[in-house]
Image (cartoon, rainbow, N blue to C red; front, side, top):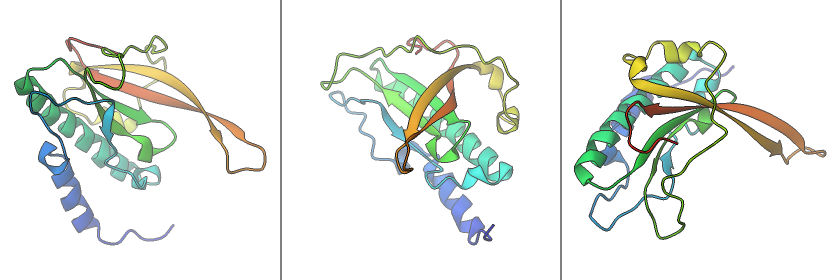
Amino acid sequence: MKKFRGKRRYFRNLQKKQQPSAHPLDFSSDSWFDFWHVHLDFDGFGNGHLKMRKAHVQALFHLMDELNAALQTWGQPYQLWIELSRLDAGLDAVFIHTRNPNDDNFPFTDSTLTKPTERLPDYLQTIEGLEQYQIRLSERITYDAFDDEPEEITDHILVIERRGSRYLL
């Protein structure tokens, strides 16, 4: 594996991305979010290194808490959650969803979510206050279209919401 250069700068930038001000968000009275999301580890650096995955997951939780505070002062109903992929750290993201003019799908519900039966991954064990969150599992099937014969791939997505949220998935 190639050496990761510029770690100090990378993690300094990750610290900045944990703040809502680092993202183009509009909390005016007429704004809305239609499954808006951000991937803090878009390049998937956490796939090869547990330490990197932990740092990105902690950053997602911090960003979710900061977004939750901003959305509470905004005053509109919203859904806020984190999705963590078991296969690809680049798919990990925090989502915001509200009423929007694109579709009448608020509050969004996912009837396929189940309670995880396996032990939670190590990168989640280090999150402080994990008991404040509801963690459920979603199974997603995608297809790798780049092969000669498309291959079906099953990913297990951990969906994490703050307990007591008004609109759970």
